[in-house]
Image 1 (tube, rainbow, N blue to C red):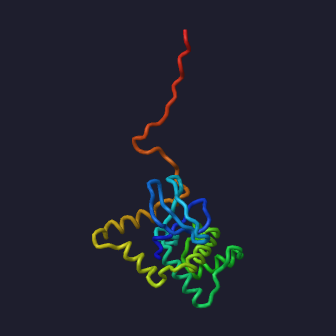
Image 2 (image 1 turned 180 degrees about the vertical axis):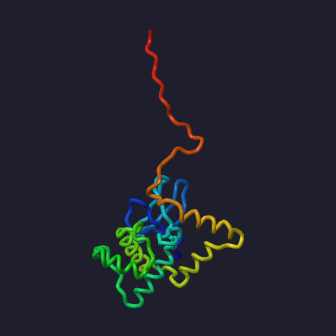
Image 3 (image 1 turned 135 degrees about the vertical axis):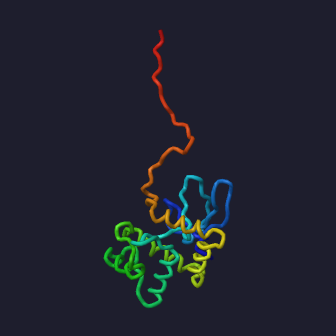
Length: 183
């Protein structure tokens, strides 16, 4: 399994594997209890291969961070649990990604990352090619200029959770006018 086949669904715990699509969304299977369910268009779904973490210079793909965590664990450093002390979590994150943005990456994000790592470790994820797959997705021969433009836009974009909802271009807005009183 590859990282592009695993998603996180807002409001639902854990990670889920994409099984297929239906006319209104995706068909997913939970990695924890293997229950299958369909999504609806209102649910926010994040593909793990598209997620990046903020650093002081640029964003780093989740695959790179996961590989760094795996290397630390293979070297004998224990990955913090979700109940670990915040200082311990921050210290481990500083080892895994030394230049992470300390203002925009919260401790809760780090704990969620470590939980996700534990889940991904328990499935048959292709760890050997995890970072190689990400590189080939980002750089294709035909759209090299587009890739650099999108990275520049991503680096200056605001975090998704702070976006202000605006009406779509061309969308009609409801205006009210006072009614005339009858004579």
